Image (cartoon, rainbow, N blue to C red; front, side):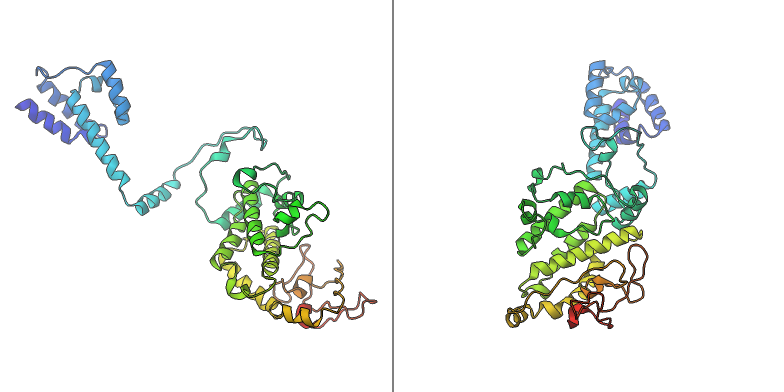
Length: 379
């Protein structure tokens, strides 16, 4: 009877035996009281190993302690441990995530030095868990670590495994490795451009389906080249939330072309922001940017069919030359610049004027309109 009472007491405190040395001492004293009980048999080495495999927490105890503890008590300790683990699994997920986040401040991973060639020798640091910081903070930290021009370009990323083989042009791979490149364009990720040999990279994206595929290819390519760069995810998120700006562009004849122009504008703005060590345009920023962008473009995009009908007999307008030393903001005249007058500067730091660059007399390309309005709205 006395032995059973002792065993019962030991079982109730089994979960905390390995945390409290005082309890270990008391347990040892209690075991001595039942030492002569015929039922007690010392745990054999083979049984001990099996118990430690079944209940890994027992590895925290010394072998001498385990050998001198009745097998019934060890089994009860294991059962208690399993119940506690089950309780931990059922713990509120939000609380678990919060606890894990708090623990990050004092949890560090040692990163050993080594070699990495981006091909057949990969450093283990490539497989570290994702950083739980804001995407813009990752962008700004990368600006300090990576530098202005990014990485040397390669094109042997495994796009075929994700169903996007052949969608990225050689120029697309070249430009996407440089976060400061203002030549990165969505058409470089268009299936028509990638498959065309005679006029590669010159095809417009005329269908919405092609536009969506190009966005997917651009996003996947960026994830391969710069996993920390979430600027394309922001663009994709904005387009998904607005159903590709259906409220504004759903009835437009050249919907995909307008959306492509907007994406190209955002890519250029993000390149400038990278140069200036500023955060990329987030999904929230893009909502504001679209309102301004479409507000300028809707004047011409909305009456595209009528203009084509009335002016089909006219020759195409001559492309306006883009001189480098004219001091005029060409993006402003195309409706793509959202900067305020006086705050617009080129990447070199030169101030650009927000005046009309329309050339009335083609024989005098250096004489422009010069008035305080956009060419795209008034000419």
